[in-house]
Image 1 (cartoon, rainbow, N blue to C red):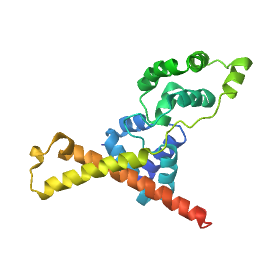
Image 2 (image 1 turned 45 degrees about the vertical axis):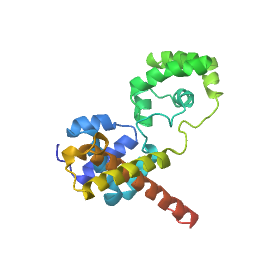
Image 3 (image 1 turned 180 degrees about the vertical axis):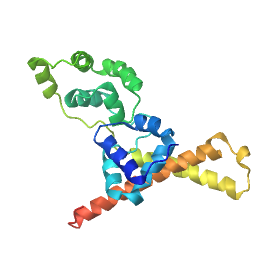
Image 4 (image 1 turned 90 degrees about the horizontal axis):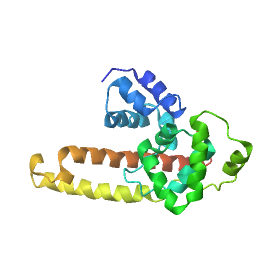
Length: 218
């Protein structure tokens, strides 16, 4: 990992928020993995809480399984906001190839939306403005929620169960190499980090809501 001053790191995070760079580029620049980058971003809750709030507002935790996403709504959102596939992947925390695969699933549900999406994508790939009639079709698309609610509670419950299972093994004196695959040390460490990330984000958001209810502004 390349050493970086805290202020310089915070500037990099702000650039990610502003869309001037991406987490993938920062990982390559600092020669770290995504888990380590997530650790450093979580530390902002101590070093720069306001920046952390901005980051989790734009890039909230999303589970690896994509049951929390309304894919049709995502295609509409991409068209309305003019995202490229790479920008969409960064915004939604999803691999761009996954988005491409999900287009075929949406086609079974709504072929008209997919046809419109492909037509719009064709113009944007060529960096050409949409014709007025096509732009009007995009503007008239309904606004729908991309993310389906309840993802925090469900994932937090799963991780808390794993945390308890892992702690029980430690109390029983079982060696790490004897632990089952879902409770091995490395896997447990990753799961616990995800759990704490969810808790930190939830705590920060609840704190902000309480401040608003009390009439305080940040």
